[in-house]
Image (spheres, rainbow, N blue to C red):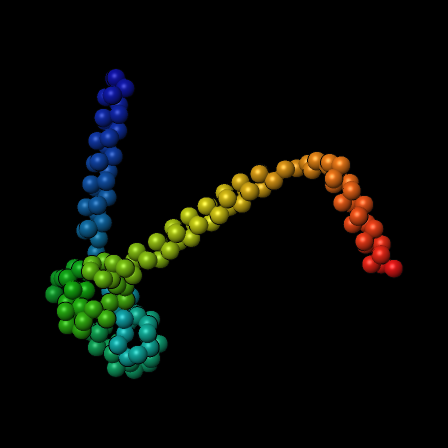
Length: 160
């Protein structure tokens, strides 16, 4: 088999593996707990429906019942989340959507880290350059020895 043939077969096997992986991912069963963690409890605790720690929470209990009803109707995770976002508004979702202005909430942390890393690299390179420009040996001239003698004389007078 020629080298281009092996590359082509590797490429097709990669494409096939990616296709199988994506089809398995899309066919994954909907988890009740995943849906609970995708929704924010509306009682004011700021936790997800799954982790709300109020014993008789007036919000989490009905939301869990609604989730169970949606799953019994055969809806997938995206359809259930769309149902809740339509009914209660986008505030019920525990993670912002990746559309519109909410895209800023997803992009900003990564942009800040990238900018900070760039600043660190640029500043460290400039510091290294300035250290490299400083001469390691100092040449002395006749004028330097005269100035040094005058400085030592002034320091002696100051100490006295």
